[in-house]
Every structure is written in C-alpha cells, then in structure tokens.
Amino acid sequence: MSHAPRTRTVLSCTLLVIALGAGAGACGRSDSNPLSAKPYDAAGQIAYNGPAGSAKADPDRPLEITARGGRGRITDVLALDAAGRHLAGELDGDGNRWHSTAPLVAGTHYTVVVSTEDSDGAPGRRTLTFDTTAPKDVVKVEFGPDAGKYGVGQPITAELSKPVKDKAARAVVERALKVESTPSVEGAWYWVDDKTLHYRPKEYWPTDATIRASSRLEGVRIADKLYGGPAHPLKITTGDRIEAITDASSHYMTVKRNGEVINTIPVTTGKPGFSTRNGVKVVLGKQYFVRMRGETVGISSSSADAYDLPVYYATRVTWSGEYVHAAPWSVGSQGSENVSHGCTGMSTGNAAWFYENVTEGDIVKVVNSIGEDMTPFDNGFGDWNVDWDKWRKGSVLQADLKAGQSKLNSARLRPQV
Image (tube, rainbow, N blue to C red; front, side):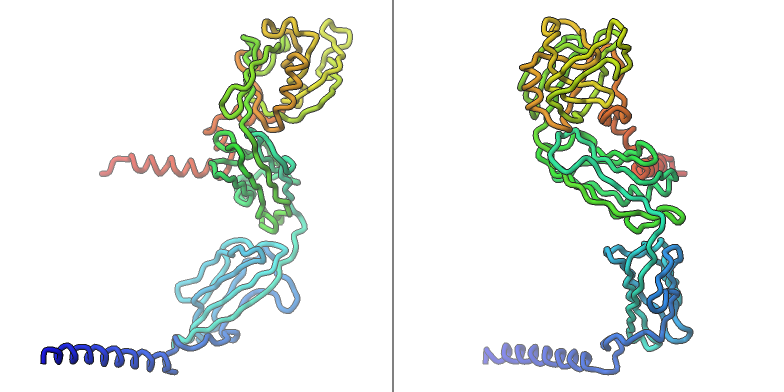
C-alpha cells in the first residue's frame, strides 16, 4: 500500500510526457504550419536592378531589391562580395524595398541572398549573383620596409600610387589598411603627405614581436570614379630592444640591450656650425665602406672644412648623411670634444662592434647637442619625436574618434537643469 501512491505519480508523469511528445510530433508533422515548410523559390516575388545575363553592374550605382506588388514582402537581404565583405543596406518598414547604403566594391563577384515571406507567412528565398565592372582609376598600396627582422623602432610605411587629399577619402583608405602585432599594442597611422602614411605604436614595438600589414582596399570606392588597387601584405619581426644614446656634452655613447647597459663608448659629435641633431633616429642601413666628401653636404672643396675620407663601419641614421662610423683620425678628441661635421665618430674597434650589434630599425638617440632637433619625416625616420597626442591627430580616424570622445565628455560634464 505504501508504494501505490508513488507508482501512480510516476505513471501520471509518464503519460503527461507522452502526451506532450505526441502533441509536439503532431505539430512538427503538420503541413498547415507555414514556418515548417522549406523556403520556396522567391524569384517571382522580387525584382532587382542588377545586370542581366553576363553583363556587369556599375559599382557607382546602388543595388536595389523590391517586392512585387501583392506577392509578399522582403524580410532580409544578405549581400557578400568575393572577399566576404558585407554590403550595408537598409530595408523599409513594410518590407517592400531594400537598397544598399554603401558603395559596391568594383571588380568583384557578389552573392545576394534575399529572404521573403508570402501573405500566409511561408518563407521564401532567392539567391542572386552578379559581377561588378573593374575600376579604371585605382590607388595601389606598397607597404614598407621589406620583409625581415628589424629593431623595435622601425615604422611601417604605406606608399600610395596616387595622392588622396579629401578627408573622407583618406578615411576610406585608412580604414582599409590594417596593422596587427603579436603581442598586441596600441598604434595609429599618420598621414605624412597625400601619398605617404606611417604607422607606429604608442611606444616602441615589443621585443620578439611579429607585425603584419595588409590592405582590404582593392575594389573599394575611395572617391568619385577612384577605387583601391592591389597590395601585397607585409610581415616583419623584431629582435631585442637596442638603444644607443649619445650625450653630446659628455662625449659618450651608452648602448643598451633590453634596458641593460652593454657598452659605453667615447665619441665625438658635430662641432659648432655642424652640430649633430638632437632627438630619436632610427637606423636606416649599414655600409662597411663609404667615401665621404664635404661637397655632398654643401661644403665647397675650397673651404677649410672640406673633406674627402674613406670611412668604414658606417651606420646610417639620416638621409642627409649622418652616420655613426669609425673615425680613427679623431681618436684624440673622442670622449672630450666635438670635432666632426655632424656624424658620431668613434675608434675603428668600437665602430666595428657597434656595426655588428645594431640593425635597421634600432634606436639611435642624441641628447644635449647644441644642434637642431631631428625632423619627423623628411630626413629618415624621426617618427618617435612626435608625441602620441599629436601623432593621433595625424590619423583621420583617430582624430575623429578623439574629437567625438571630447564632445561626449563635455556633454557628461554639462550641468543638468
């Protein structure tokens, strides 16, 4: 007797589950429910302004899809190009018309999936495909430097084949140029001029990092009749953080690897009238032998300052001819006075050591010189002499983002009445 109630309870639950299962099964098998039906072909329910047959669409013309009168409505449109990029669009509230709100990509293939429903709510679907015409006027992108291993100060560059001046057009370009690093760091593009962009992080790159630059600009509309062209992706890596800091007043260079001092070298820098530039420079390249002549930097051969010298272990830091190099003729002045024409000179042994321990992209910094400051862009890579706030203003996207944030902060601080 004590087991009977429990038995009846179990049986009741079992019957309830069976009843619910039977009901669910009956509903699932019902042919009267439109939501259970396989989507029908909605070809006769929609119309669009795309090309017919093998013709190609004009990418400057918006894509439009409409529902044929009285035959149902559009519920969703998914448009993708060959690269998997979504075409933004807008569907009206009645489901009668969808139109693209962003330019089509030129020279690509589109797949458009249109979802509909009829007056009974049954789902329909139609897949449309078409190609867009190739652009006639394109902006190609070339990334720099060459693939390889660099110091932590190496900027990424992007050279455009045509000038881009308009702010909105620059935003399109900048949005399509991607730089990613592992480990990840904050960074931004800077428009050096109408055809040149530089990218750098807020601080130097991490050591042993992998940095990739790529473009998704190909086929994208930049301006009227102007589209993005192809670009080869770039991959570089970094090694140790090498920094060479020259104090022009003490006449010594301190070399650090990952923050640890690994050498202290007596040097001579530029004498008055030829003072070495202050600031951060980046190693541009190395040459075992360079013939240095005063005429190449504007010194007349008849001048008392004229020179024509064979120079070894030359590490270049500016395009105008500033090097760190062997200067055996000035060993007596190294560590005590500045006698060069702007270069940083040291003994042959020290120059050989420096030459072997630095690479392109390493940091060479000069402090306490009476010379001018290193310019940011026209004489090598002086990018690190631009503070981060100013650097961000050189990016169209970052500047707009910062301006928007400033407006938001001002609104939050505004007293409520």
